[in-house]
Image (cartoon, rainbow, N blue to C red; front, side, top):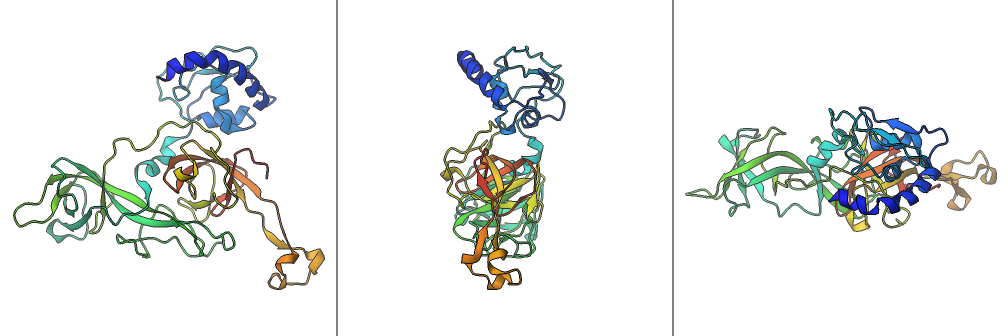
Length: 382
């Protein structure tokens, strides 16, 4: 399907793409580049284009490349936009490169999702021998799937966090409370495992969604029978432990994309609408190849491949010349303060979207991407 489309439009695209590529190309670029192990399309574009998120420009200027996700180590890519150099095929002994390193985002593709509610989902009511924890090879007893036939597979999930919009007036300093970690009822609890180790500022606003973490997978072996009111689920994959109260969702064969074409947001976001909500495995900041949660999703026109630039919001600071250098900040009124410019931090590409929340990967940057930063068009200048 992909190749015939390319054949029809290749000639038209080439004329447009060569001039577009010429405008974006760095002045010291070579005529060709040999793809190396460990490259990503974003990395290659970062070496030769002014805007690395525009790597499809390189693809369009090489119309003999049928699929940009099937470029292999050893391939030669033409960067001579006026006099093209044919792409030489590589040895095809290694896996093709992708826009982003999938290994970095695999846990977030497979194990996390954001939903509006979870109370209506089926749940675990007990474990074999009245255990407190269940694991691979053991049995869980579940309620709410009485009509499911034997052989039906379910992912066992647990709510881990509740997302809300951020209050810009109170965001985002180290030392604020941790994210609202949840138990199986959706109530706040301390000391549970979470994929997000960050400081979530107080004063959250509108509800955005509950995050569910997949712990393992099981198969229905029988429904209610005899004196039993519940179905039996065999836990048949390694994973995290199962507890009473964990929820069940049907297993999806392929719920996420594996290939991404970067592009700007489909619509302009109001200032303050799109924010960095959380940084995985960190406190409040991250860098290239770190995963972040964003406060916008499908309902905001965000889809996989959407690229944002992340900006540190300019500080509101007293005008010391006007109010005097000896005045403390607490005694300075708003009329005597000035707003400093926002400061660019890095680019983020969305790789999974939900209704109001998205997951993105930090692709590049000149300073840390932090919780509370503003998300803008990738070409924004301020």
